[in-house]
Image (tube, rainbow, N blue to C red; front, side, top):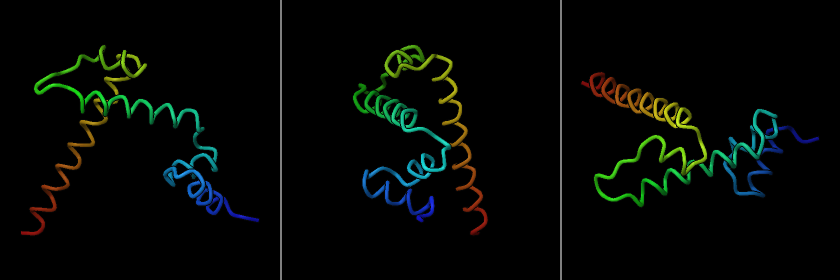
Length: 100
C-alpha cells in the first residue's frame, strides 16, 4: 500500500500541481475547490498589477470587486503581505549585520 506522501507525489506528477497542494488534499487539510479559488484570486490580482498604468492605484473596493473577495478580505491579505515583506527585510538586515 502506498503512503500518503507517495500518493501526493503521484498526484503532482499527474496534474502538474505544486506538491504542497497535492499533499494538503491527500492529508485532508484542504479541498481542491478552495485551492483553485485561491489560485484564481491570486491570478486576478497579478493581472491587475501587471496591466495597471504607471502610478495607478486601486482601492480596496476595486480589488474586492475584481477578485470576488470582500473589502475586509482584501485588507486582511494586504496586512499579511506587508508583514511578510517586513519580516524578509528584517532578515536580510540581520544577515547583513551578522556577516560583518
